[in-house]
View 1 (cartoon, rainbow, N blue to C red):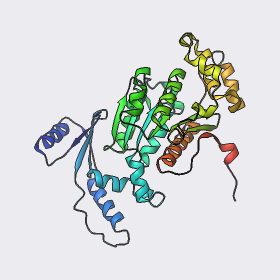
View 2: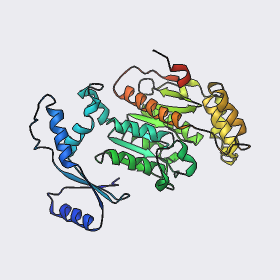
View 3: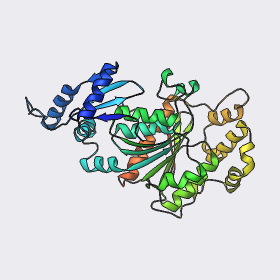
View 4: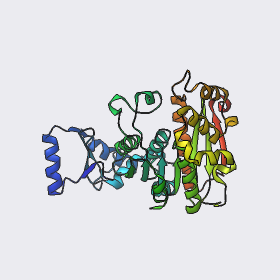
Amino acid sequence: MTMIELLDPKLGQDAARIADLKTDGAEIVDTYDEQLAELAEIREPSAAQPTPVTDAGEQFAYYPWRHTLARIVGEAAYQELRTNRNKNLLTAEEQERFAAARVGFAGLNVGNPGAVCVALEGGARKMKLADLDALSLTNLNRFRAGLPDLGVNKATLTAHQILEIDPYYEIELHDAGIQPQTVDAFLGEPKLDVLVEEMDALPLKIMVRESAKRLRVPVVMVTGNSEGVLLDVERYDTDPDLPILNGLLDESVRQQALAPETAKLSRREKAHLARAFVGKHHLEERLNESFEEFGRSLAGIPQLAESSFLRGAVLCFAVKAIILGRSLDSGRYAIAFDRHMQKVA
């Protein structure tokens, strides 16, 4: 889906479009000379006077939601600049493999920080983003956005954030979310290398895993847990016989989630079913207490910004580990600040 315009000033039609946008009052961001200087420096870091760069190319990226026109180097040079500070934490071969992967994010409330983190590291340059909900004011205690973004679909907003980091990303946007009839297409056309599943609808959470098993697509999911997170890893790519949710999903909960009458449950009842999906005994005391108060003294299940940012980092770590063939087995993992912070001095 094209959300921005990439314009080549050497082409007559594009040059005219650039001129029209300037006349129309578009904000201009032009650090092109600085980009060339940085590119020269990273290519010859030990040189007192690096050789001037002449092969960087030139493009203009127009962001209609900001009415902003940014002058940038061409795609290859842009990636060279953008990922330079990843060296040597990622090798050139690892960076290339990470970039070439196709990752889908289903659910962009929890999935947003993960998608943005992956994009910041230059990974998964072909992404699928799916969510049907719009940003609301109560999301602003943990969602990296602001008042001008209220009412914007969360998948669209995530796409905006990624394209503002890197206009050369290819994003397939599903702003109506995933439906039962579109699950297989989302995972398999074209096939994902990893699915990040963070949807609220329990029937879809189950359906998407059944599809992932058939298509051998690994699934990762994080769940907020007071001041930490739970990470679920389901390696259907290496073990297609793995039971969904690593066998942690009680059969009675699965049947209830898929039952037609589940759609008629109250918000409180659906929240308790969602807790049962994860497993009450895996959640920390304050979070379990909050589920009991939901619909009484609480209007929603609480989530903190620090947990949201941690979830993004954990999702990025898991996605990258799977893509790069690092060791990450199927299972549930718990990460929490209070248990994993160690005073060293």
